[in-house]
Image 1 (tube, chains in turn cyan, blue):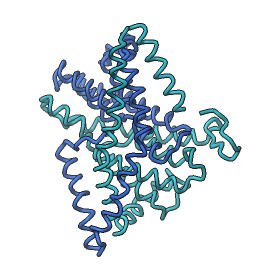
Image 2 (cartoon, helix red, strand yellow):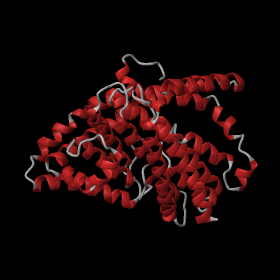
Image 3 (spheres, helix red, strand yellow):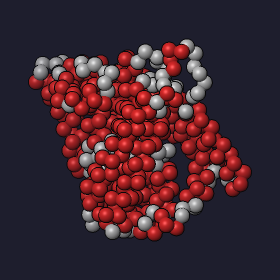
Length: 206
Length: 179
């Protein structure tokens, strides 16, 4: 899938470059964005360390267990194959909470941590598990109680009511989460997305 | 999304609750919080180094796509009936750019606010769309990159369906709330 998307982006870029003649801009973009990717990763390192440290404390003090137990009925529906006492439940719960409250800089480290925990349960390390796909779907559609970034933009632009978007955003993200979960559940049952890891070598679909 | 500061007051407060609450709770429970923190934090650099190639791959491809002008072509094809609903070409380009690039979509929202004013229907709709969708490709490449999964199965499909649902419901809900 990622192979296809990557190719599509490159093909579209190549064709439009020829049509528009934006050669210089495209060359500059290659240099700039690859540098930016590295800077972004580097910038993430501090936060990553901060939240991984915090997670360790939360884990050892039993805080994560407490949170996980509280929302377990919901988590069990979403991730039927993840055992209740597995660390993935805790890190996924923390990531979901961070996302809902608009804590983007905590959400990414916590989400990566959750993926690592899910990878422990994954028999085929190269292929995404159902739990991983469900986690991604919920993550990218997350219900927003506090759309911090959007509120900040409106406030900076001099809006008379920047928090007026909270209720519509909450409703819209509820819709997107419902669709994301349904899509992940339905896709997980479809043959074309089946985990072909048992069949041996990759079938070359992706 | 990228490492931006939580900017609204409520978010900052919740952030602080996490930041102080976790170590305080640990201390109360008798955890050696300093050593424990170091133990966890040690893994930070290793993880970010691991995601670099995935980030370069996605950000460069998106960068080339944007610089070539392909986006302008596509958003220029907005049908009239959508424009009448307040879904102008700039909103369409926001919806299309959003899954690819957080920075670029922030730029578009900023531009809409600057051109139409922060209290305009356009600005509100753009902000709700911004809050209701996610940089799906960035999240997928970072998250799956961290665990070196190359076959993501239906993660992209489900993520994009969620984004589309977010954008479409934002358009409908905003028409109800703000028009």
